[in-house]
Image (tube, rainbow, N blue to C red):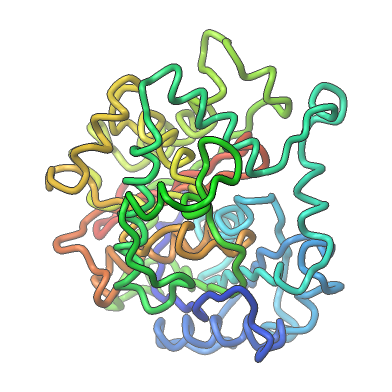
Length: 388
C-alpha cells in the first residue's frame, strides 16, 4: 500500500425496528455529519464517497443513495455484497486512500429493511436453486441446521447458545445506540419460544434500521487527530452451495473456511501471530449465538473442540479478548450496515471513544463480516499503532 489508512471519524444514528421519523437521506446525513464532525473536517474536504446499501427490494426504496447526494460532484460508488456490504464499502474506501487516489474518503452504510415488504421473500431465495431449493430453508432454519451440527460435532449445548446471547444483551445495556435494552439471563433465553430447534427467540438478531459512517484518511490528513489505524483487512469467498462445504478436508460447513482464510490474511498484514493474546476486542457479525461460536476457531481463539470451554470462561478469564462490547448484532442488526457498525465500534474502542461500553486499554480490535449463507467473510484489524 502506498499510504497508511486511519479512521478519524465515526457517526451512527442509533438503531430501531423502524425509523419512520427520518427519510433515508436524513439517516445517511445524520450519520455522515456526525462522522465528519468527529473527524473535524467538512464534506468538501472529502475526495471520494462510498455507500453500502442493499438492493432496492430490501430497502423498499428505489435508488436510495441518490436521495442523499453526499458531496455534490464528488466521485461516488454504491456497494452491495449482502451481509458484508458494510465492510466491503469500508474496504473500498480504504483502498482509495491506500492507493493514493484519495487523501480522505467518507464511507456510509444504510439499512431500511423495516419499510420493505419483500425482505423475507428475498432472504428465502439466497440458497442454491438446484440442490437446496427443495429444502424449507430460511435464514433461521439455516442457523438451526448449523447449530445442531456444532452440538453434534463439538459438544455445544443449548445453554452455551443462551450464555453467549446473555452476554451480548448485558453488554448492550451500556450502548445507547442498541435497539434492544433488556437484561436477559441464560435461563430467560432458554425459556423463550423456539424458532427452529435449537434456536430460541432471544438467540436471534432483531430486524433493524439505521445508518453508520466513518471517515478514513492518510497519514498527512490524520496529523494529531485521534485515529484507529487499519492494520490489516481481507475478504474471502467460498462455495455457494452449502452441501459443497460439508465433510471436505479443508473445513466443514461450520468451520467457516472463508473467515479463517480472511483472518490469516488480515493478521499477516497486521503482524499478528498469537491472536488470542494480541487482540483486545472482537466485534463479531454473528446474528445468532451459534453463528458467533463458529467464528472462534476461525479467528484463532481456540480449537474447534475447545469451543464450549471457551464460552464457559469468557466472563471470568480477563486474558481473552472482550467480545461484542457494543452488544453485537443480537442487540441491533441493520444488515447492510452491520459489518460497518462492527468496524466503527472497533475504531471507537481503539480511540478510547466508546463511552460507557469502552474496554480499558484497547490497543487492537478486530471486526468481522459474514454474507450470504456465510460464503462471504471479511476481517478488519484496527490498532492504535501504524504497521509497515
